[in-house]
Amino acid sequence: MVSFINKTDDLIRVIKRNPLLYIESKGNKNIHKAYLTKHNSLFYKVDSNNNEIIILTIWDNRKDPKKLLY
Image 1 (cartoon, one colour):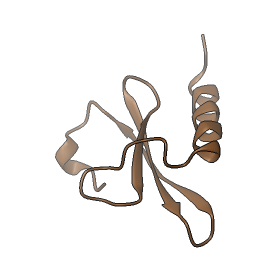
Image 2: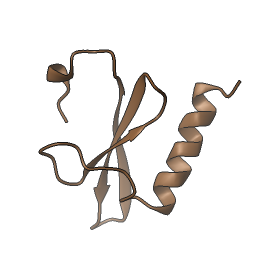
Image 3: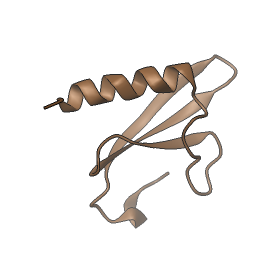
Image 4: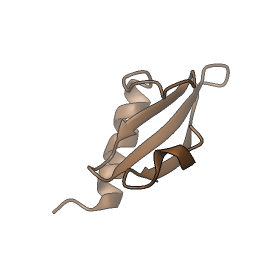
C-alpha cells in the first residue's frame, strides 16, 4: 500500500514537471486543483514571476465545499 506521503511526493513531482497540467479552480485563475486521493485534493498556485509552485492546501473532499476558499 502506498502511503499518503509517497502519493503526495509523486504528485508534487508531476506538478513540478508540468504545473499547468491540472484544472484551474472555479473562479480563481492560477490556482489549480489536483486529486491526491479519492478523499483529498491538493490546491496550488503557479507564480510565473518567480517560477514557483505554492501549495495552498490539501482539502478533504468530504467537507462542505462552500467552506473552501479556493
